[in-house]
Image 1 (cartoon, rainbow, N blue to C red):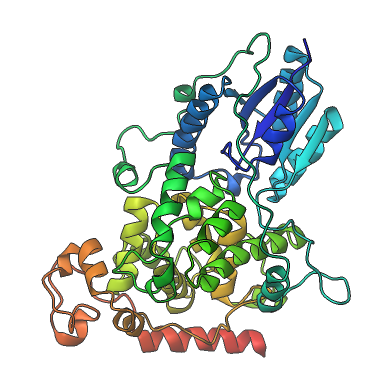
Image 2 (image 1 turned 135 degrees about the vertical axis):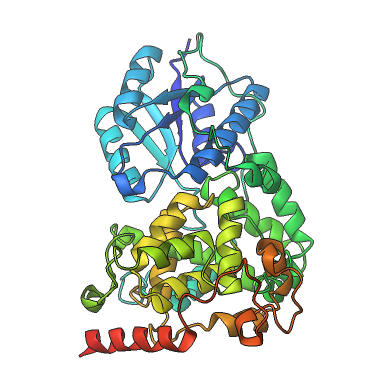
Length: 458
C-alpha cells in the first residue's frame, strides 16, 4: 500500500478550502494530526479562553474527518519531535501543512523541515506576507496603501472543495484523548457564557458567515453600535482557521451589498500578519523606539486601577460593560475594545503590554498579529498607529454610539437609568450605591497622559 502522508493541523481547523488537505489527499492515505505544542514563549502560551475554543473546534474537526472516512490523531509535545516520531510509526516521510506566521510557528516549521519533507501551502490569509510590495520592492508599513495594493489583486482564488473521501492508512496510530488534555475549565466553570454565544468548528463558522451576509449592508453603521449585533463575529473562526478568508470574501461579495468596509477588515488581518513577519516581537516590543522612554506607572502602584479595569469596576459604564462582556463571553465589541484599551493606556497610564496580555488570556479570538498590532495602534507606539495625543473620551463615545442598552445588558446595576443619565451617572448624581465612582476623572487622566507623552518627545 502507498505510504501515508501526515496532515499537520494548527490554526486551520477546517476541511473546506484546505490546500494542505487537498495536496495530502492527492498522494494517497492521510494521517491528520494535531499537536498540542506549548513550546512557545511563556507569555504567548494559549490562554484559557483559547483553550476552551480549541477543545470544541478539535472535536468538531474529528467529527468532520470521520464523515470522510478519516480521523484526527492527537499528540502532545514539541511539534518537530512529535511529527518525526509519528512519521516513523506510520512509515510517512512527508508532511503537508498551511503556512503560519506567528514567530513560534515559523520556528516550528523550520525544525520540522530539518527532519521531514515539509510541504507548506497558503490559505491562512488572503495573500501571503510579501505578496504585495511598494514601488521600491519593500514591505508596506502603512495600512492604507497596503489595502489599495491588496485590493488590486482581489478577488482571491475561488475556494477549493472538500475531498469526498480521505483515504485512511492501513492502521491508525495511537492518539491522545481530547478530554485528557484539560483544555476545558473545571471548577468554577467560567465558560458558561461562552457556550451560549459560540459554536466553535467549521459548521459554526459557516453558519456565522451565512447569518452575517444578511446584515453586511448595515455593517458600516452597525459595527460601531455596541447595542446592536452589527459586527460579523467571525474573528475567532478566522483565527482558528475554521473558515478561510477567501471563502468569506467570496460569500460576502456575492451578497450584492456594498461590502468594501468589511472587506478592508479582512485586509487589515493580512496587514497585521505582514507586520509580525517583519517584526516578530511586535507583541512585546514598541515598534517606535521613543515609546521605550514612556514613563508608565509602576504596576505595583497601579495594581488597584488595573484590577478595576479587568473586573469592569472603573466607574466608566462603557468601559465596564466591555470588560464584563469580555469575561463572560470571551469577546468584546470592536468599538468598545478601542475605548477600553485607550482608557487603560491613557487614562490609567498603564503600559499597553499589560492590557494586551489580559486580552490574550481572555479572548476567544486571541490572535498574536491582530492583538499586538491593534494594541500598539491604540497606544501610538505601532508602525502605523493612532497618535497618542488623540485620547478617546469614553463618556462621549458611549453617548455618540448609543451604548445605553449595551450598558444595561452588561452592567445591570445601571439598568434602570435613562439614556440621558446612563453614560455618566456621576454627572447626574444618579450613581447607584453598588456601582463605583470613577477611578480617575477624564480631565485628570488626559492631562497626566499628555504630560507623560511630552516628556518622551523632549
